Image (cartoon, rainbow, N blue to C red; front, top):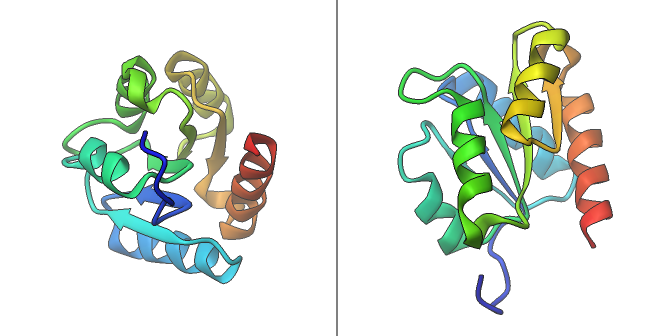
Amino acid sequence: MSSRTPSADVLVIDDSDIARESMKRALAAAGLRVIDLPSPIGATSAILRTQPRLVVIDINMPSMRGDKLASLFRKTEKLGELKIVLVSGNDTTQLDALAREAQADAVVAKSAGTDALVRTVKQLLAEAR
C-alpha cells in the first residue's frame, strides 16, 4: 500500500442495507472513518483506493460468501496487513470454524449487537498500531 494517509479506518461489506447502515453508524459514532459496500464486487479496488486498516465482512451474501472473500484477501500480497472481522447471524461455533478456515482475525455474531462489533474492531485496530 502507498504511504498516503488512508481515507478510511474500516470498510463494511454487507448486502443487507439495514445491517450495513447499523454497523456503519455504530463504528462512525465510535470515531472511526467508515466506508461501505453492498456486495463484494469492487472490494479489492475499494481497499486499495481507500486503504482501510480493517474490513468487516458479512458471511452470507449472494454473490460471494464472506469467508471466501476473506480467504482471497489473505492470498493477495498487497492486503496482507488488513485485519478482517467476519459477521453473521450464524451460530458462534460455525462462525469460529469459518473464521479459522478464512484466517479472519475475529468473528462477531450479529445477535451480539453493534456494541460487540465496535469493541472488537477497536481492539484489533489498537493491536495493529
